[in-house]
Length: 305
Ligand code: HEM
Image (tube, rainbow, N blue to C red):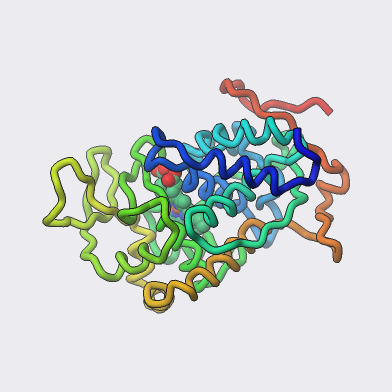
């Protein structure tokens, strides 16, 4: 057990979880980034609900949302870190794991502040349906991300995270990676969006995505892919200007991505001048680290107070 507040020790143990030769492309980094994003991207500005406080995915209501399929792997990879540093909340651990993973995979340094509190039951878990659907287009992206308080430039910068990881047929129904080196953070996603010819392909499960029909592809290689929402970024003129800028200027992308990811993981969080979180949940509940959700699917678990 480390000293409470020793976030450097936590960071080191997150780094130690990144390399996993038998998992996906050999790294847990991409799934950590997606975990951090999905735990924050439920925010609704109007009602001030959802967001990175709470770690609601420990409860079936949020963890069992089909939009979060696969993120149980990310949460399980972080469990040894939580056990070693039981004082950190899940909501802090999950957001920190995204930040650490991005940096370790060659991305920018992203400011991260601690203090999130975990929900102690599922009564404040945000409703499902707040995360984006990859099968849709530009209008849907604006509907989803404007609700969180992001504009066009921020939407494109955030979507640049699809430079990492892959889609899994048994999670989202889509299949494949966006770039050839999906464990290295770069602006390759934007470059490939503009450079390659993306054609619609319906997978055997009926899901429609875009692929690059590379004539040099070996038989055992899979084609690069894009989601319909990714292709919408080059079809919509306002989004496209930002794709072009980020494809051309990696430093600009890194700078903007760091800013917007930092904003993402602070959604729903209010702090005082000393950076302490002042959300009512936190004031009422104190700095409570809620117990781990049961590993078996027993439905919502009510924590004992
Ligand atoms: C713009 C709207 C977005 C849509 C529609 C979308 C959709 C998806 C889908 C369908 C997958 C595949 C999941 C799977 O099958 O495992 C995925 C993966 C991923 N997404 Fe997004 N996403 C969006 C935005 C974002 C944002 C804002 C971030 C982070 C800033 C992000 C980070 C990732 C990462 C890192 C993966 C790979 C996960 C892995 O390898 O396990 N996405 N996304």
